[in-house]
Length: 446
Image 1 (tube, helix red, strand yellow):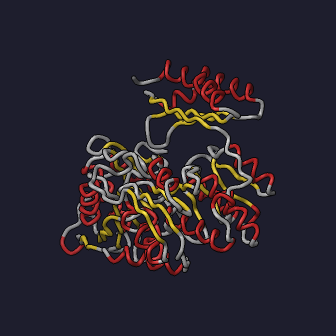
Image 2 (tube, one colour):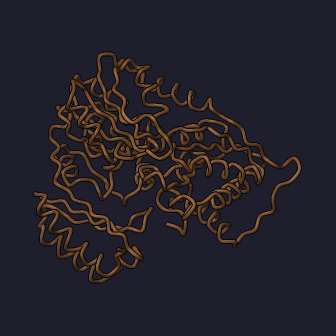
Image 3 (cartoon, one colour):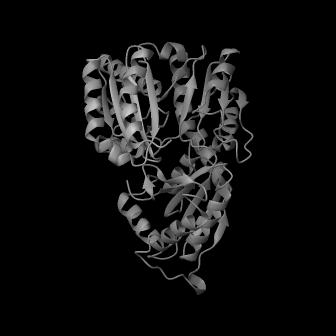
């Protein structure tokens, strides 16, 4: 991770950590970098949070000031920017979003022409420009770029999804929670095209209500709606719609771990699971590792972050990977996670097998899990502290393989995340607190 770029782009509180001038600087370097061989097109999308308009226009102004044309796709999911950048006449793409964070945060994710997150060496060049280590002269005369509205990008994306998943969902009843975010523009429209009957929640964004007690980070409303009716599945997206979690008809939450288990088994059964691998992260539930092992499927674990999952998938050409949060990558379809693609893959499996979500989840036992986030003065120092390391080792030794403790620094916030899995909730709470108490006492922020 760099000084400004974390595991998922630049992110922080709007007009505190990430203001219009910072977005302008990022846009300027993008415009400079991609115009060195002549004027190029750069695509920009945004989610529904209040500050997204401000940052979108600042980013576009910087791009145009350095000789590229900025195409504004408007409100849309992050994976749409990845797809259109990869398949359209664009040198790069940028998404203004802080994903699942509260409305007062925002961020900038940058995609290469391949539709993947920007490489670390280019991020480093942008950071050097932000810090004044590099100077750029503004373009003048006919070298100045334009800012161009590009609303047709949304329809192009929806048409592609419909063509890729020509499903007949008539007779299927779904609850869809749009998190008052980017899936507002896509999920209802596409699922209705395919014939599904929908109950749609949280699809009225006002700039402030994105992710507020709704969506994949707060799925309780979606779960309750599913329990109260006769539904086949509930779908809850995050703010920028690159991840999605579900609820079975009984209301039980189905996370990314369930998706990896269900799709991994299905792909194996139909003979397309390359290398017999499913790629996940170290934060996946212990139950997933055990269930895949029983099925004869190898779970390959990476560090946390979808970029690391995708890098590992590319090494061996594995076709499915993702995170417990619901950020799943189907490599034969896209180069990044897409909550709507995840939903379509699950619905496709349900249609092809004739099995419902409750039957498909059988065989996966999810261990109780507890995650505590400790806000700290320096997450890197906390992770290297000898006392913290000793406590982690002692907890893992005490669990004797019937659970585990994972401690990591957040890639986007000043947090140390302490997570335990064990046979009971009580054991999780006890073991997490042993480490969290030390981190809090030595590095915590009140």
